[in-house]
Length: 130
Image 1 (cartoon, one colour):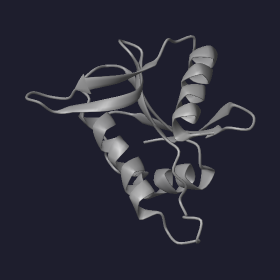
Image 2 (cartoon, rainbow, N blue to C red):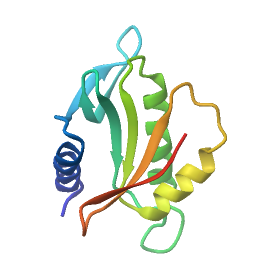
Image 3 (cartoon, one colour):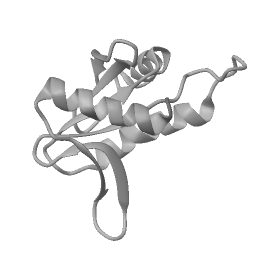
Image 4 (cartoon, rainbow, N blue to C red):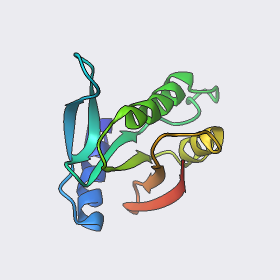
């Protein structure tokens, strides 16, 4: 499956399991021309991102680009001024656990739930909340 197909599957399963109607949405963050495309959004309910990147590359080295993108999503979720529940869904368990461990204890202005999504069983598991 392509990353886009996986994202679509995650949105469908998220909607089914949470009784939501999340969609991918480009939204303004703050004033000016600052915007970000959030992978999960339903007004007044939830906002979030999806990461399909693994922690390690196929060669076994650190996937620093994927790690940086996953961490950047936490920044975007922190910048969002709405009252929606914030979630970050990652398909790689190593990425989800290490990202949570790296940032647990940090003072985020809003609670962000970090979830692992298992693509084979189409199930979500909460890794923790930042």
